[in-house]
Length: 116
Image 1 (cartoon, rainbow, N blue to C red):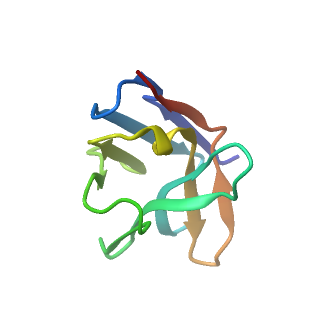
Image 2 (image 1 turned 90 degrees about the horizontal axis):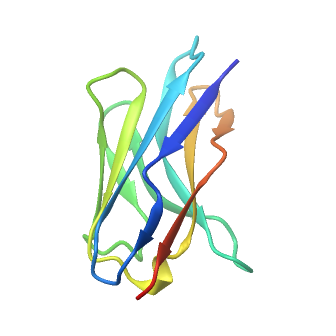
């Protein structure tokens, strides 16, 4: 059974930083990409960042160089370093994994709140 476990969310002041972690277990197939989506109240879920099996990365337009996705030394782990956080970044952040057959898996989500 595939499980994605996120950690690292919390409350941070505007301009601050957070680092999210996601560890995937139960993986018995090839992964196409892993990454993060977010969903704020009343809004659609949107892409934050993904890293592909060829190490290509993609980011949501709103990131504008503030966030960086990377792989962990442990297999099937990814990190999201978020800097210069804004109140608009407040959302539930979901770890995402897509298999080579384009099947999607989601974590439970971790709350990120940016507020003074």
